[in-house]
Amino acid sequence: MAKKVGVVGAGPAGLLLAYLLHREGIEVVVLEARSRAYLEQSPHRIRAGVLEWGSQEVLLQAGLGERMLAQGLEHRGIYLAFDGGMHRLDFPSLTGKSIWVYGQQFVVQDMIQAHLAAGGEIRFEHEVLGLEDGGLVYRTPEGAVERLACDFVVGADGSHSRLRAQIPKARVHQKIYPFAWLGILAEAPPAAEELIYASHPRGFALFSMRSPTRSRNYLQVAVEEKLEDWPEERIWAELNERLGGVAEVRPGPLLEKSLTPLRSLVVEPMQHGRFFLMGDAAHVVPPTGAKGMNLALCDAVLLYRALLAYYRRGEEGPLLRYTQDALRHVWQAELFSYFMTTLLHTPADSFDEGLRTAQLRHVAESPHLQRFLAENYVGLYTSGRHPGLLSQEV
Ligand code: DHB
Image (tube, rainbow, N blue to C red; front, side, top):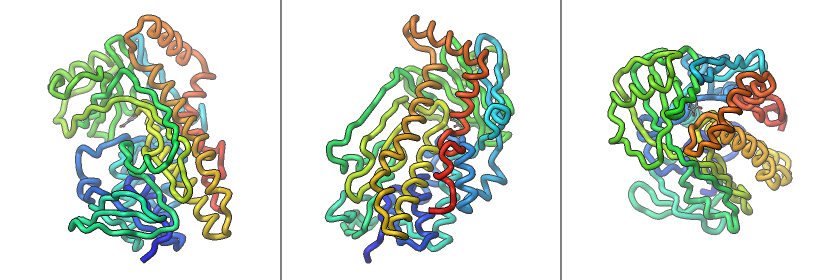
């Protein structure tokens, strides 16, 4: 049977779009190559965990925020640690807003559960092979190749997107950083009650959390390094070293350990005919500042509104403007993620290090720069500068 919208990828962007469309009675099917258990449970799926003010509002408005409210942690600030001191940025006084610490894996679990409970359709273990005559070609778990006709196809298949290639003559704007992050999830209390972004001559370290007893920490490492180079004792010693005495982390059992190279990528345009890209398939940010999931949710809201305008009133304008509208929030997040990455990571070049130190001291001293940082952190595009994104009338 023909579906109106075919969504490829059950990540935060694909699931939110499908859930919102289904709620409006628009037929939509999600095709996902992995199994439900893999998406929900695999330790390799642990991703960032910061929701901007506007992102948590979207989840609440959509009826997806119940567990986030119960188990997520509202944070009203972050710490920058450097030169042996801690500098707190207070979000409510700088922006009037706060953020939520709640893992992406939980967001995905909540969305899958809510979408299926509402009668929505997600076909797990269905691998999309390509697009054909306005539809999708996919392989079922049994190995059969089938076709699905749809009005619109949405590629939300992640940073290694296969569907990205469906946009002919796309420009790919890219930046590779000479750093990677070693991330750990540990059954150990966090270093502080709020996140600490620590800049140290030995490299950047981030002290985050998933709950009051579970910490999520990261270390800047060289891109050539391997997980085997980092036994547990070395990770904990290095984390403490880079905290520079402002706090202390106590070791606990590791639940996950991973390496992520840092890069920025923007695909332009994000659409071709009746095909649209969302989330990491369209853009990647380095993790510093935790913009990835928020950007994905922002794309989904924008495309949802555009599709609704089309199905409700036959308006094509918002769909035609999707790339233009999305790239505004995309480039803003790219700018902020680049700013945070260069502000906090120790570069090899001594001139770059001089510039970076000057910038860091300026941030610590200037209320203007603190406001710039805080505004971006809580989310410029989802937090009032463009209220249309969230307003109810479409
Ligand atoms: C987390 C990740 C980030 O990249 C960040 O800037 C803040 C928090 C996290 O995983 O908790």
